[in-house]
Structure formats: C-alpha cells, structure tokens
Image (cartoon, rainbow, N blue to C red; front, side, top):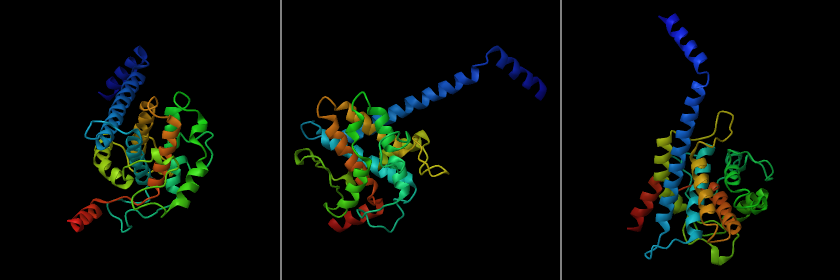
Length: 261
C-alpha cells in the first residue's frame, strides 16, 4: 500500500512538478490577504478611538495611537516583560537590548535595516513612494531622545520633537491599552507568536509587524493631508518612547479605576 501511494505521489509530481509550489503560493496569498485585513482592522479601531463628535479625525492623534500600539507591541515581542504579570509600575522607564533589536536591530544607522524590525517594516512600506530615506533621521537620535526625556513628560505620555501645534492630544499609555484587546485578537487569529525567535531576532509575523504595518499604512493614507515627514517624526518619537515604557496592565487599570470612583 505504501509503495503504491509513493508511486502515485511520484507520478503526480512528474506530471505537475510545480503543484506543491502552487499550494505554497496559495497559502502565502491567503496569509497576505489575512494580514492585510488585520492591518485595516487595526487602523479602523485606532481611527474610531480618536474620532470626535463631528466625525472628524485629527491626523496627529490617529497616527499617535497606532505608534503607541506599535511601541507596546515591540516591547511585548522583545520578550523582556509580561505585561499582565509584572511588579513594575506602569509608566516607568524600561530599557534593554532585546527591545532595541525589535525596534531597529540594535543598529543606530538607517543603512540596510533589518526588514523584520519596526524601522525596517516602516522603511519598506514608505521608501521611496511616500518618503525619502532622510525622513527617518538618525536612529541614534531616537534612542538618545528617549533616554534624555525619561521623566520629562506627564505620566503616560512621551516627549515628541514636532512643533507644539502638531503634538498628539491623546495619552499614549492609555491608547496602547485601549488598542491591546483588538491587537491580541487579530494576532491570535493569525497565529502570531509573541516574543523573539530562538536566536533573539524579531520576526515580522508578530504583533509589532502587524502594528508597524498599520502605522505605515496610516502615514501613507494621510500623506496628502499632513506632511508625511513630520508625521513620521511624530510616529517614531511615540513608538520608541512607548517601547521604553512599562505598559498598563488590566489589573493596574482596574485598580486605578477603583481608586478614582
């Protein structure tokens, strides 16, 4: 029986040597379509969070919400903290090379970024169609900016380097918390892993890949409304700042809500 099955499989392969390749292509196309749908879902949720009573959406707030979610996702995917089971205080700073590897591959130069990192994903989506490479500025500047601004902003917010008129009006820590249930739902539906690979390197098929994809799509989507270079600067400041901030856990949120009642 096994011999006959093996022979039929061999004959099928000879008759159509690309059959398995086609199957792989179909699966890849399905994954890509599902991933695209998840990105749109994340975008839509972020937009609804900042839509005002007149149904208007401020670009800076929309992008900042997605950037906050991307920063938190990078922290989660670094594997250095379990959001829901940590004694660290929400809003305090957290640093580590594992986080840097997800953000930029722990590189401080833009040249040849790891395509699986947040910077690599954003650059891959936006350059050169929406932005020139120079719009990303210095990666080292982003790390230095975060380190220098720890404790310099109100709780749950990050210091951004855009003009005051373009600063977000949302609280990044709270926005990331509000985005988390949907992101977890989409990540679980797609079978995304949490944390780095065994070699410590990030993978794009993960929460940070999903969020960075949505962030890139939002920057592209709003490019005719607001200068995409300015928006990218804002997005990177919020993303890197949130990746270095302890998130709000459900328990901490419930506790703070109880105290405020």
